[in-house]
Amino acid sequence: MPDRFGPRGVFALFIPLQNANMQPEYELLRPEGINNQIYRFTLEVPDAILRVVEGGLGCWPDQVIIGNNVEMRIWTPDQHAEYRAKLQEAIGDIPLVTATDAAVAALKTMGAKRIAALSPMSDVYSQSVQNYYEAMGFEVPYHAGLQVKKPEDIIKVSLEDALEGFRKLDHDDVDTFLHVGAALGIVDMVEELEKELGRPIVSTNIATYWYALRRHGISDVLEGFGQLARKTEIAD
Image 1 (cartoon, rainbow, N blue to C red):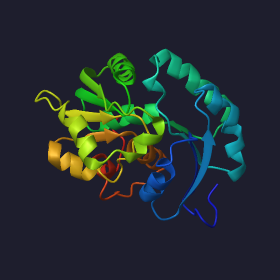
Image 2 (image 1 turned 180 degrees about the horizontal axis):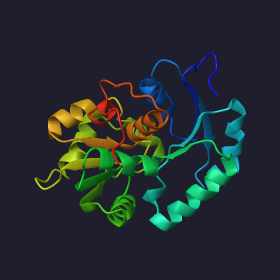
Image 3 (image 1 turned 90 degrees about the vertical axis):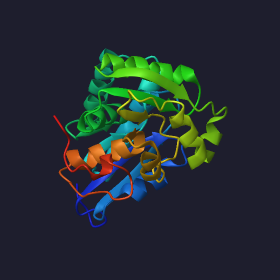
Image 4 (image 1 turned 135 degrees about the vertical axis):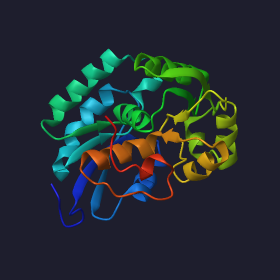
């Protein structure tokens, strides 16, 4: 429900406990008039989210936003549909956004057909991402992890580190790059990365917040965060 600090809407954002980049990144993306309320969960996904999601309803949100990429685990579209249904049951008729659904919508909006996927840690995670998005109808011939060893070090990844990771996936037959793993704080790097690579990047935190805004009827162009953030509508 809109309030004095969010006359255009209140977003309840659920993020992992250890992802120190996500709150400031969502604030960077927040347009005037939106009130971001942050709630955190432990890593026993998805059960941890289901345990805490009802606690975020006390701020009377206009949307509930789940900001982690469950597709980095062994995860199928059918599992995701079941998970989404459980979340929706827990929050009632409040609109729900998940990072996974947002990424799919963002890729479609960018016209992506053949993508390369980058995740922050091991290739095991990016392999799961490849499998999920291929099941969703995209071609994903290339994937890689940045091989960050400790979760607490993901936030330390630099523009040069991220660019090196994307360059390993930079093949001529790729039309779009996909970044999953919300702990990798590259929101403020995407514009420059796209200039270097010459193609769009769908980056999870940008995609999630962009999708939430557009579903809420807010079409503000988000300058400085790459091509997706300048799209004012979600493609069918």
